[in-house]
Length: 141
Length: 348
Ligand code: SF4
Ligand code: SF4
Image (cartoon, rainbow over all chains, first blue to last red; front, side, top):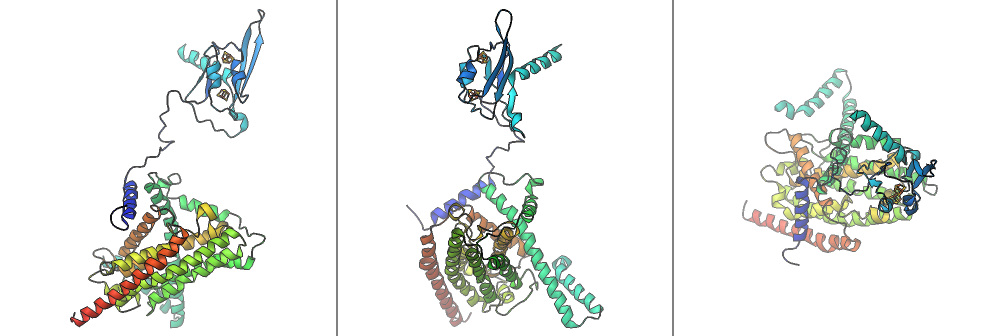
């Protein structure tokens, strides 16, 4: 407590007027993209060549987000045929990524996941990754 | 420059001549011009209110280091149009337990004094709807009737938050009416008149803000409280009583309260300009442009204060009015009177 009566008021006015003429610090999102951390938790992605369809990730998930479809071949080996994540319930906690013994799961920086319908939030990562691989092949060859 | 200066006056003259050329009796011409004036004032109020809603959000944004509305139109300029359309399209809900007649009436009644105030404001050289010889008294008298509409709105809604809000509004507006009137007394003593045009004319060489800085500051504080603007926005107090007297209003009725609030902001700023900043007087630019520039400077001051200070506590609010502003404005009146007498005795 010092100085003249009303000094604090003037100080406050000074701060706001400086802000008024200063630059905005908010991120102008759709025009300017955010700079995301390397370990940002966005959409999950699956490497189907590594995944053994063991189901560990689904067991670790606290919300039952992951549904794995697999079939056994003649040697009774499991093969992945579908890998659905229902992002409506996903916490993006990362337990599934940590649990995967093969390192097949990882997070991508893709975060714009809003959809018009609930069905839009269910992603088949297996189909997605095969599509991506197909595109890569098409682009490469 | 001369034509720009008198564009409104010559328009008025042209209209009168045109009506006379139709062979209209004088009283009819007078009536017609009154209607035109009323429409002009309403247009001025509406245009300003719409722009002020936008300006307020922009100023608030910039003061909080963000950009404010910037999605609708360039720089978000059409945001207020979109808001107005939204409000127009909303359902007009009247609560089941409300006093329907009173509830409806209050929303209309709040707007009438807000526009009536502009009758005595000199917008430019000779641009005043009615240059009453008690102009300032009229302004204060009409301005204080808005309290009744606020109380009506709060009471008729039959909601405890509305009632609380309107009780606060009434207590606050009545308390601050007194220092407000006393702060204007110094100006009246200097100008020697209640007529707005004479008050403006008296500031030809020196603005009264120089001679009456204390009066200006008390006026500014009391006016902020009269307007129920931050930091004196207790009647609205979003965080505790939601929106005070306006809680139950929706759609266009709510918009009318909103409109009245901003119309009052314009009129209070216009009065401050007229009394303390030489009204429409200024070099080079046309007088009405000077008036608008000064009014917007005052409005910016109000916004600056609103977005800087947190809301005051209710007992502090009353204390400030009765224990600080009132004595200060009384002392100011006394000092002004003494000084005037002294200067007269010294033969100035
Ligand atoms: S991030 Fe968490 S919630 Fe989402 S799928 Fe993996 S384990 Fe489940
Ligand atoms: S834990 Fe890894 S390997 Fe096992 S099913 Fe999940 S993603 Fe595939």
